[in-house]
Image (spheres, rainbow, N blue to C red):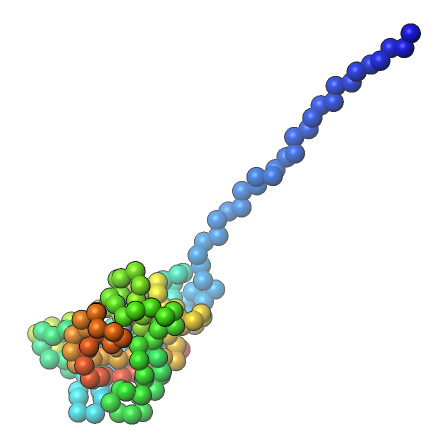
Length: 180
Ligand code: CU
Ligand code: ZN
């Protein structure tokens, strides 16, 4: 008689398929990249100032100080397409910087031109200072990089609605945004 031995095979579980990879933090390779803009008045105006843009992770920290505005007024403030103030009236900077094909809107809106920044509000002395963070512009990399673009202060408030300008009127100060 032939005996048949049954051997129980022990199944071995494949190990480690679900290895956990640490979530990579959103640290842009250009963290620390800095740009500056020296705003100079266009013809017939006396508005001047400075703006600084610093990339930190996926955010850009923006600091702006402007003088020479009429007291207690609001002013449209945008990054424009071209870093060219040569026309003297700011028009050589072209339209709002819009690399993503978005509509003109508030900086806080879900969709807006990359160049749509928060408006400037002048105090009783005609000075305006703002600090804000943006995830819709970048410094030193990507299609939303502000380096080499224009920066414009307008005479009038931005209505955030009129396309594609916000109806903010003439350009009273102009700068080229430059790598620091
Ligand atoms: Cu503008
Ligand atoms: Zn716009």
